[in-house]
Image: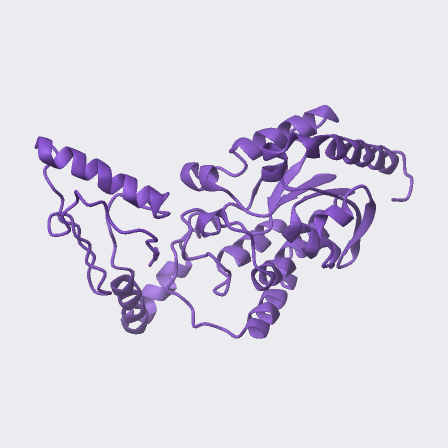
Length: 317
């Protein structure tokens, strides 16, 4: 169940007995005031403003759900379901990774155990579709039970050029469409400047789920996603990688250097048996906020285009 930490007190003109939230695990209820009464309209508006200021920026569903009860029912059903019913289910078409219902939360694993499990799971994938399915079902993946959508990426499934971003944002989480926000439009413009579009490029995330509050991935979270991201490159076998931001850079280049020291250089990204030429950029969000970062990004983009042209002509990367 999603949890929110409210950083501020409720507005003074909101009476908590008329709009109250029960946070007990077994129930979640909201007593709604009548909005047609003038004295309640301002109070409701103030309450919504308080939610926004407290960090509640996204509604996951139209109605509350008791996730604890859902988990208990799933476990009980798995223990009592007849064997013949299970055999029948195995013959039905399996849903795609994006359509699979969420499973009950897995037991918390030690950091090293979660990373080793991710490495084993990613290395077992034989193609990109299987990799996506394994990642969608990986029980120790951060944010898996918090986000609403699993967004593996966009564009061509396997292309000569892969652009890696850290994770979806609030626009992607709301729409359910990968690379659909303002930062994605900036990326589209950058690709168009060197003659590419989404039909000829793979757009990928390190984390296919949006982190709470759009925060940066922690080193441990990045380490869990790293085997899947690197296996993706090994299976897709691109010639060039465009790496945006700190988490993708650390994963693909196995380095702890800050992005500022990695820009302006060409690297070899070794992912399993495959080696790709990699170029590091500031994050797309940072470039949206600071136009001063764009000239350096343009220079590195031109170098990436030259590397792609050299690979097309048979030159060694």
